Image 1 (spheres, one colour):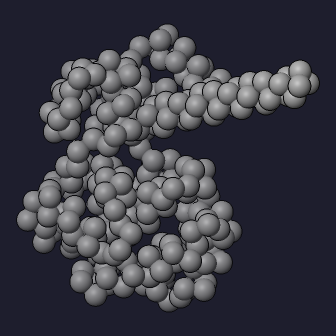
Image 2: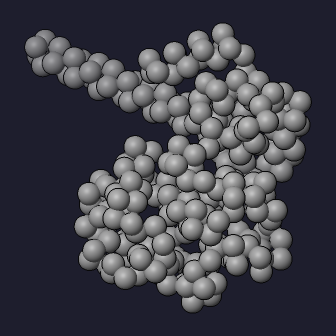
Length: 259
């Protein structure tokens, strides 16, 4: 809550242009992890795909980053390395990253995805992009790499490849749309995702002052704000639940005394 309030004050002071949002909230998550996507190297793209699988799970951003760092430390950032490590070895690394609740399932997923990538595309995600017929086919092919690669993971992965892979054009995520509406960047009533993407790209072209940053940074900043809003909403809900439970307990105690 306090961090949200601080960010809101900074946003109000600095302005809410795309460049200011990136400056205040941060840009792409791949950059935060030290992954260099701009050159389009297959090895770097696989690193981001691995991180996207962690970000796409029902764990916190902190645990996702910690788990990726453990894989990086073990040099498990290539499909053949993951396959060579095997299921048990992967669960050990996942546990160290804090993935305890999902370690068995995630180890299986990583093995399946890595094997499929090696068998179908010679371990090269750039090859997957090359043979995709269009943006939708690209999304379908990424999902088809393995069970458990869902829409959320595909969206996380592809949104930071905008401008690098020509066919990477996913719709804005629910988090990005929530943030954009909250910041007044798109109308609150706007429902069509593709239309929202068009409007956000217009905002980027007209409001960006930084040549060093791209639309993917703007979108990532929106996702970061969306995550902050979701955390704030969960905090408020849990506070209301605690207050309600406290009131009920007090009423129950009072009724027992009066009886």
